[in-house]
Length: 248
Image (cartoon, rainbow, N blue to C red; front, side, top):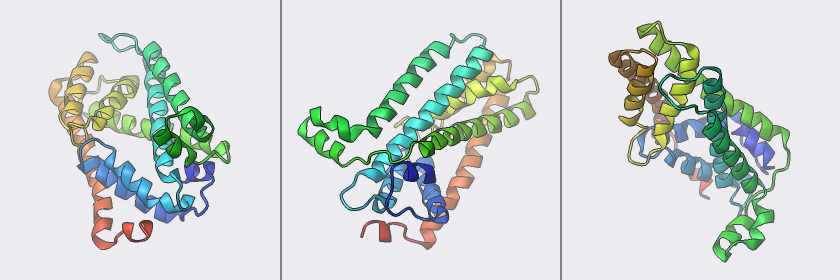
């Protein structure tokens, strides 16, 4: 969050403590509402003032963060599947690499949206002209590295839970399976990927020899951990109104 504000030259970067609070509130919305993107909209509103009046920087920052997260997820899955192909699953390296190239291209297109907006239809051109221009590239690289870390940590969590119930599971199995299952949270028909994530855990970890009961328990354990952490953002909403200053 902080790195991308620095990368896009935000005029009034909030303190890290404030950003952490806003991030956690967005995490609450993403976890408890369908689609996994409502929290991004909330964060886009909350951080909009950092870019000055009339700028679309708050939402542009959210889109870039999502794109970087997708790049990190695809990098992790592609690398792990090349090192350790999952039995019964077609090789994922090539499709993940193609998707990674597309995600990187989308990130760069957004970063240079103001320059590219001249050839767009009028409504899109007006939005493109409001996009911020990257002011510094090192923070953007740091944001990508941090995105990779945020993809690895849930995979390690899933590995720890699954291995406690099925000792035969390998770390590289989890590095392929957990990110793919976690992506189910972005399906608009589910709340935090519930049901779809469990089905993927059971199906994919089953290919690694994990009993269905163990895979289901590990998936539910991951969701309970996420829901408990996200509830802290809901607690902040009960004691404070984060939109009070953001909408002035």
